[in-house]
Amino acid sequence: MTQRAEMQQKAFYLLLAVVSIAFCFVLRPFFGAVFWGAILAIIFTPPNNWLTRRMGDRRNLASLTTLTLCLLIVVLPLIFVTGALIQEGSTVYQQIKSGQLNFGAYFQQALHALPPSVTRVLGRFGLTDISDLQQKLTAGAAQASQILAAQALSIGQNTFQFLVSFGVMLYLLFFLLRDGPQLSKIIMRAIPLSEPHKQHLLRKFTTVARATVKGNIAVAAVQGALGGLAFWFLGIQGSLLWGVLMGFLSLLPAVGAALIWGPVGIYFLLTGDVGKGSILIGFCAVVIGAVDNVLRPILVGKDTRMPDWVVLISTLGGMALFGLSGFVIGPLIAALFIASWDLSTSTREEIERRDAAHDKDQPPPPPPAPPTGATGQASAQAPGPEAARTD
Image 1 (tube, rainbow, N blue to C red):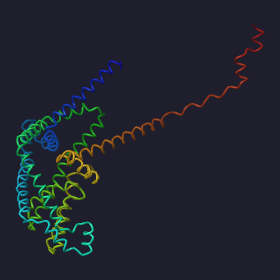
Image 2 (image 1 turned 180 degrees about the vertical axis):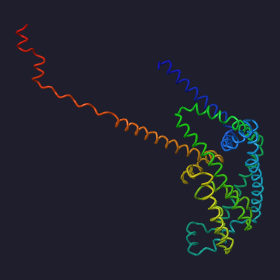
Image 3 (image 1 turned 60 degrees about the vertical axis):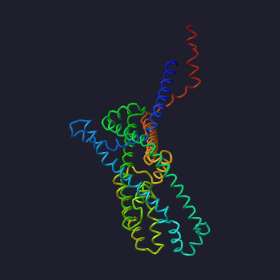
Image 4 (image 1 turned 30 degrees about the horizontal axis):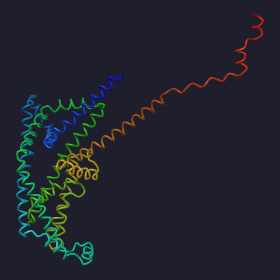
């Protein structure tokens, strides 16, 4: 390659990088809409393909039908649950503000029920000061109310932006469902990797995306619904709010919904309500635990699961960076990270095995020629006496 051609290639790559970064900045205000449109397209591609075959390859009608199903199955229930959650949260906040829900009193009742040895240990850490605890709870409630008010004002001011993003997501989802196979072929052809590597990473991406959204959200919804029903059956106020919190926390492995029902069950046991405490702890530990151990492998799949500590750290890190969408982005990046390094390791091992087999198949080198003695060399180079007499 000449120097001029090499300079032109570098300039082209620089232009490609600058244009790509600029395009990402253009899409940044609609990052959530684009991301969730792509994720929903990945999830609903199998039913869309089935409808396309059933409708005689009428892709527009099939994509529109799939979009309607997505609205009925995912979007509308989520809107209804969000509205009910806002109303329930407002009610619980009013009860806390009016004193009907006094967490300081609940903590004091549980503290008095503890053995004296445990109380002394808690006192060393300053956890028995009820007045200080109530002040902290009041300050926390005031801060939470300010955050809720700011969020409500932000939602009211950004209603138009939300509607625009929602419309962009639905519009993008329709075209991704209709033209998804063609777009995937274009993207695959543009990626500068070998075909086996591209196929492997694409399968990993789609599998983890479907498993994370479909499996984890389904498990979270079931666990949250069961926990909320248990709270409602036992007469605990704000059962919908606590159910949604349990469903949200169930996205985190190892800890999950137990962060909500565990302290409530312990409180019942400490305050003498052994029946409610036993029912709550037994039901949540057995039924909700069975949902996580039985339903998650069925929906997610054993081959796509990552270690729980990787899921936990990637989920928390993703949510810290990307907000609510991070519970999908974090595990997805972690899965691609693991898949890429596994692919790198397997490729290097394959190259090493191929080189070893090549060296083994090579014929052995020929033996070296025997060295010629000094006398022979002299006789070959110097003329004998007969030759001298002839001359």
